[in-house]
Length: 180
Image (tube, rainbow, N blue to C red; front, side, top):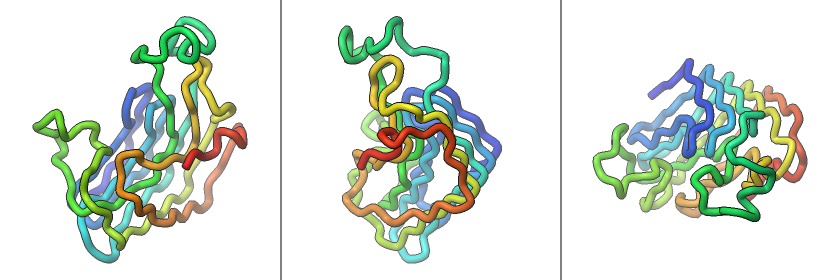
């Protein structure tokens, strides 16, 4: 499966996500800005030689378009407000034994990145020519958590290694780099 030439801005959940029963998922030529979760090409099949590939993708942290009325609003006034969402620029792909439909039929199938299936151990992650930009703080202006790399909280406990090559990191604060 391949998805390309897609942009996502200010999605509460994932900008683009897939968890299909296919051995190869490729995302290319995409831009993600200020999303709850950036690109997430998940593989939903058991086997060897499974691939999650990404190329020429730009992931931007928080933009100047604010989600709340005042600074640190989510820390002090109303942390349950729908605008108070934690952000992960790049949730490392998972490989699980069982995919989902492109359009879920049941509410229990949401969010798309949630899986109660066991891990597949044949996964490989390659990210090439990625641009990561403007993760200049570990929290957003509103006070929610912000990090460049993160893990899927709903995934099995096996995380394959990710090979990230020929990529640029601009305006990334060390405290916002990763949360594992």
